Each structure stands twice: as structure tokens, then as C-alpha cells.
Length: 108
Image 1: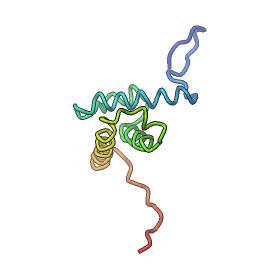
Image 2: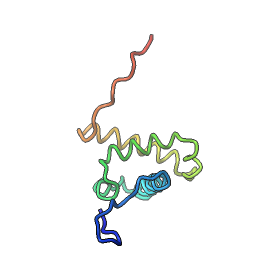
Image 3: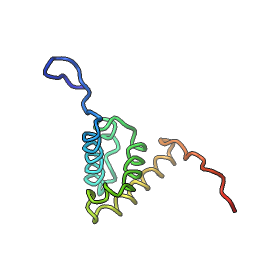
């Protein structure tokens, strides 16, 4: 929350479509900047209001969107995907991420 011009508390980030894209862009910038250092998981909740595992899963799901691919530099795309998958796996292994939801039964 922040204090607006009228003196009332307002959300720090608006979730209108254009600000949602900006929010996602900020998430990606954060992940790319901190990737060489193993991430800055302790800052994710403070900066983005979400748990680290959710943060990394959101980036993974958004990396599949064609319109986003053009905004993520190609030299970072594969590294970012691998890094986020790694972080989700590690966070799950230490109990900081819920297990995967079971998918539909596989046909064999």
C-alpha cells in the first residue's frame, strides 16, 4: 500500500492489463538480474507480494506466451526457463512449494 495524493491508502500496483504486463516484466527483470546469484528469494514477497515458488511458476507459465517471447531477450530465455524450473524443484523439495496437482490419468 502507498499513500496517494488524496492521502488515502492505495495498492502499490494496479492490476489493469497494461500494469499487469508491467508487473510481469518487472518479475522477469528481477529473475534475470538475480539469476547469476541464485535468485533473491528473500526479496520476492517484499517486491511482488507472492511466494517464491508462485513467482517462479508464474514466470514459467508466462514464458509460453508467444507475445512475451519477443520481450524476453533470446540469450536469457532458455537460461531463465531452466533457472525457474530448478527453483520450483528446489522449493518443492524443502517443503516451500505445494506438490504438483495430479493431472488426468495417462493412457498407456
